[in-house]
Length: 112
Length: 113
Image (cartoon, rainbow over all chains, first blue to last red; front, side):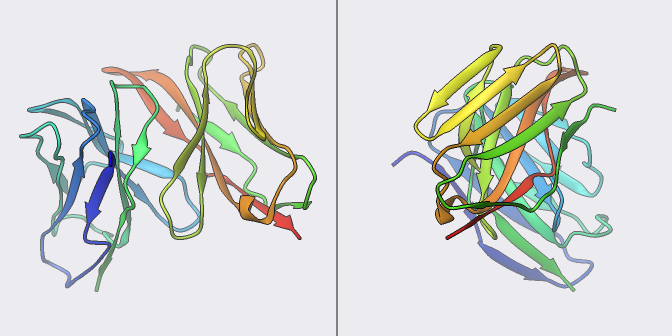
């Protein structure tokens, strides 16, 4: 079964803690993306990677970090510097940058 | 500022009717256009993509693209209650480092049984 997995589905953290969200794909896609979605709003791009060992900042990268050491994996770390981290985080991948994207099930992060 | 605009809705249609969802975009050079369906609490699911002017049909769904008017639409024929969801329009727009996909905020569709 090909697809994108994200874990965990729900994550609760205290303010001031860093947290890492997992994203794995077995679609053999080169490009991977992280988005944030807040209630009633569209998707906002945090980071994207077109190829292994390379990634670029999106529109709202402050307070986030990523790595792309393997083609299948693109973890996102939400650092304590992120002012308002509570949101629904979505990982996506595509067969080449700019092609149609396929999304994982998402991780809902709550920071209190 | 590159933008993708959608009416937030809700758009309410009776079961069996045609639902028409509209999207406008700001970058005249955009080449690729996508429609996603997102059920409440779930992640977006790709429905269709379209690259050329005109219509593209897939089952009950038809995407329509008019690049001169910078307008893309999604028609859902024979709407079903299960089609009730938020529909996101996405457009690839030029930017630093190449094209970037910009998502609209979505239109909520409600199909009444």
